[in-house]
Image (cartoon, rainbow, N blue to C red; front, side, top):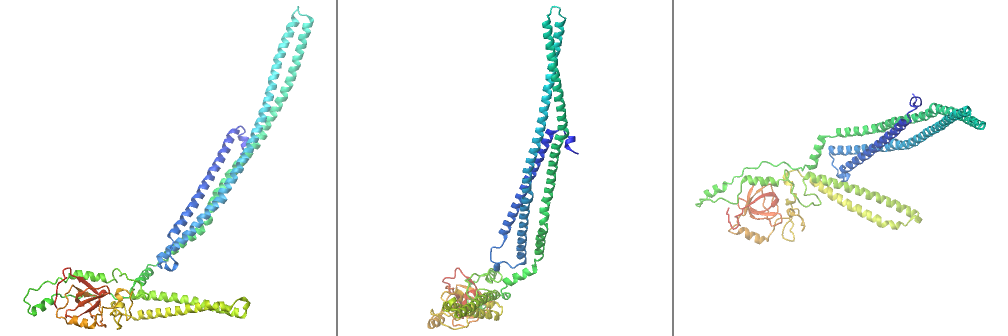
Length: 550
C-alpha cells in the first residue's frame, strides 16, 4: 500500500509522522548511549572490586588454603568477565550507537529534501490556481462590462433623440467590450486547462513520488531500528561463550576447595612438635604440718601465707603452657630457637632452600664470568680479562659465605630433627650442658656467653665460691618470699643450679634479678638457681621480713 494513492491529501500529517519517527530514532540512540555508559561503569566497578580484593603481598606469602586460592581464581575470572562487559560496551558504541548517529543525520537530511520537494510542488500548484482564478475573475468582470455596454447600446439605439454619432459610439464600445470578454474567456479557458493539468500531475504524479520517497525513508528507518535491535542482542550473544567459560571457571574454582587439605595446612603451619602436658599431680601442703607436729613443736602452726590457692596456681601454670595459650613473645634469634621444634624445622628448611637458590645463582654467575674471561683471553680486543677478576673474587667470596651459612643451618636442622618432641625441649636455652665461666662470673646454659642475649639464655648467677659456701653454711637460712611449682623437669649440671622434677613445689628465697634465674629452696633444704621460665611463681605480699624455716 502506497502513501501516494492513499494519503494524497495528508502532507502535513505525513510531515509530522516522519518527524516523530526521527524523534523515536534519536530516543533509541540515547538509550543505546546510556546502556553503553552503564556497561562501561559496570566493567570499571568490577575491575575496581577485583583490584581491591586481590592480595597485595608477594606470591610466596599468599595463603596456601584452597579456599583462598579458589577465591583468587574467581577474582581472575571476574576480571575476565569485566573485560567482556567492556567488549560489549565498545561494540555497542561502535556498531550500534555510532551507526545510529550517522544514520539519524542522513535521515534528517533526506527528509528535509523530500519535504522541500513536496512544498515546491504545492507552491507551484497554488501558483497555477491563482493564475486560473485571476483569469476567471477577469473573464467574469469583462462579461459584466460587456453586459453593461450591451444595455447602453440598446438604450441609445431605441432613443429617438439620440444622434447617429451616439449610436455609433455605443456600438463601438459594445464591440470593444465583447472582444475583451472573448479574450478573457480564452485566457480563462487556457488557465483552467493548465491548472487542471498541473493539478492532475500534482496529485497523481509529483505528490505520490514524494510520498513514496517518504514512505521508503520511513520503512528504512524502521528496518534500521530492527537491525539495531538485533545488533544489540548480537553484541551480547557474541561474548556469551566467553562469559560462560568465566562462570564455568568460577564453578571449577569452587569445586577445588578442599576443606581437609586446608585443615591439614593449618596443622602443618602451627604444630609445635611438643607433647601435650600431663596431668597435674596432687599437691599435699599438709606434710609440713605433720612434720612440725612430729618434731614436737608446741606453738600453734601458723598458716603459711606464702602458699596460694592451688586453683589459682594451676590457672597460672596453664597460662605458662603457651602450647595451648598465647605464645610468649621473645626476640627472634638466628637459629629460630625461640620457636617450637616443628616450626623451627620448617623455618630452617626454608632458609636452607633460599640459601641453596642464592648459591646456585652465584655459581651460575661464576661460570658466566669464567666463560667471559676465557673469551677475553682468546680475544684481547673484546676486553681486559683482568677487569673481571674483582667480580669473580666477589662471587667466590659470596659462594663461600653461602656455603658456611648452609652448613650452619643444616647443623641446626639436624639438631632439631634429632631432638624428641617433649616439653623439656621448649626451652633449649635453659638446658645446661657445659661449664664455661663468663666474664661476670655466670655460666651460660649453652656454653657461650652473649652480652645481648635474652634473659632466658643467660646462666644462673655464680657468686664467689667462698661466699656461696658461707651463705649456705649460715645457721639462719634466707626467708621465703613465696613459693613456686615446677612446670617442667630440669636437670642440674652447673654448680649453683638446682635440679627439679615436674610438679615439684619449692620455696622462693630470691626473685629473678633480670637474668632469667630464680633462687629456690626445696623441702629438704637444698637451695640453688632454677630457670624462671620453668616454674610457676606465687609471691606473697606480706612475705617481706618473714622468716620461714624448713
